[in-house]
Structure formats: structure tokens, C-alpha cells
Image (cartoon, rainbow, N blue to C red; front, side, top):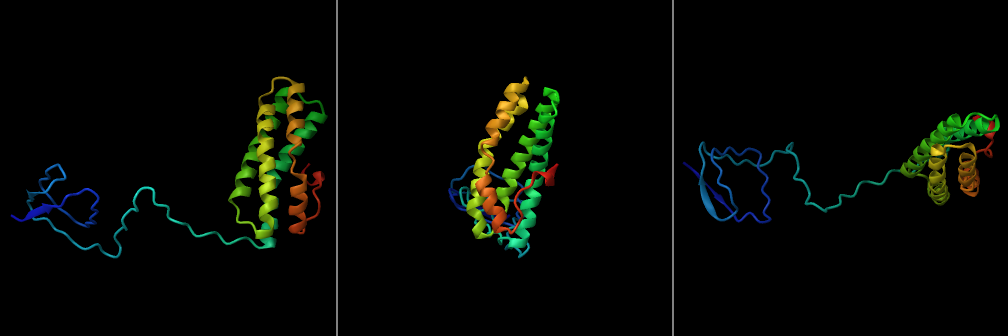
Length: 194
């Protein structure tokens, strides 16, 4: 019977496509193991999986290609629309004196839409000129998020409205104005979202 020699297996890594061993002796010291049937060592085929990189190794991913201005304009409008619609609905509910339970649901919807907006603004490969104002808008949206969440949990109308007003301080108007200008979009009009 053939013998499989074990090499001190501290950090040695061996890729084996097929290895049939009937008996395996535990341990990493030098020694021999009788194998039955014979051990078969083969070279990895081109279709075999490549070895996993060592732990802690960072494999760089290719950077996504930035959007064109036209693509960025469509993407931006698609990203901010759900937030703007939820915001306008909440504003209309507040102005029409809806019950606090309705306002709470509306504020929670704004918080959800804002969280999605932040994530999508972050995950998009914006053209270089838009990166700074997008970063500013994300930062303002993050500051507002705490207040949207508190408004969504408020038990009374006055504290809810106060949190909505607190969130409104972080509306990102300067960044939004710059973004819309760079994307050649008209200025924000709340009637577009009512």
C-alpha cells in the first residue's frame, strides 16, 4: 500500500482536486499514514475553484463607472421621489389636522424613505462634480433621520410636530440646489410630489 507523507502542516496550503484516504491520523507532526485505497493526487483543473485568499486579505473590487449627467439626473430623481412624496403627504396630513396615529405612520414612512434615499445616494457612482454635494445631502439626511424616527414614535401631536420641525432644519437645500443645477434640473417644486 502506498504511504502518504504528512509535512509539518503549520501554514502550508495544498490544493487537491481528488484525495481518497481510507484512514486519517489526526495531528500535524511528521509521520506516515497508510492509505487504502491508494491516494490520488491530481493537479487542479482549469475549472477547479481557486484557493480562498488568507483571512484579512482585501480583494479590491473594480470601481464602478460614474454615471453620465443624463443618467445621474434620472437616477437622482428616482432616488429622491419616494422621500419627497412621503414628506408632502405628511405635511398635508399635519395641515389638515389628521389624528396623531396617522401622523405617526406618515413620519415613519418618511423615515423609511429617508433611510432608503441615504443608502441609494451612497451606493451610486456619481459624476465627479456631484460627489461633494451628494455627500452634503447624505450628511444632512443622516442628521434628519433621528428626528424622523422620533416623530414616528411620538404619542402626541405637539412632540411629533416639533420633531418634524427639527428634521426640517436638515433639509439639505444648499446641496439640493447645487445638485439640481449640475444635473440641469428645474428647482424643487413640492407640487411635483403632491
